[in-house]
Image (cartoon, rainbow, N blue to C red):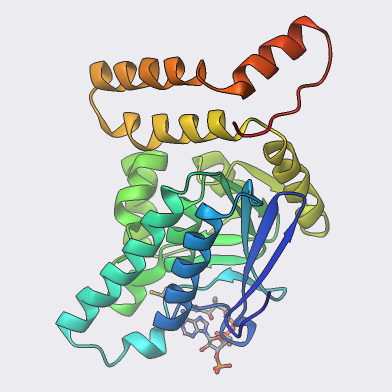
Length: 260
Ligand code: COA
């Protein structure tokens, strides 16, 4: 399926959502934010989808940020609403009930890095550049960048990226823990799809339980977080997939997980 703003394909349980404004380096205007919100709502409820890969169209950018032309004329109230709009969409991505992989094919700046940080895994081309350059516009991150970067890689890197606005290359992003993997640009799609296929064949309810443990348990104190993990662990014993996985191990065969 394709609309003007997103290209959406599904194959073998992997839904690829490609932001499609390459002439504007896939900048996030309000319409694109809304299209992404709808696309992720659709992915959440579609049983044919086990994993989502999110990327940008064209050779240059994942997403070069929130749309500066659109922001230029906003009033304070509209600015807040724009921030809330993006933040709500990104929270939906972060809390999706199935894994989301950001395939970072170029610039992931500002809202682009914020969007990538909401994904559960990030694979970057060795040519990618990531950063929070809002300071250069007299702004600060508005889609959760200050909070997610802080949680992902700590105060030193967060303050370095957000105070200087300078982007870092993929290798440095890997060192800082911002991305999970860096691969040669020519192999980005193949390597990302290999990872996506691996997750598409994993037990969906266990993946979901694991995402909840990090998203929900990770925001509690240690006692509550451990308690939450135990409850999720117990819940797995209600699934056919857990019986299948453990039986397949004992029978020395590959498991086939049905998501039940
Ligand atoms: N919002 C709106 N338009 C954007 C954009 C953004 N965040 N980022 C890029 N574009 C547009 C440019 O205005 C240009 O449009 P035009 O051809 O109509 O003039 C087009 O995308 C191509 O960008 P250009 O700047 O010509 O490409 P470049 O290769 O010279 O530079 C970047 C690439 C990413 C370094 C540069 O585009 C940039 O700094 N973008 C803004 C990044 C940013 O500050 N993001 C945070 C926003 S809060």
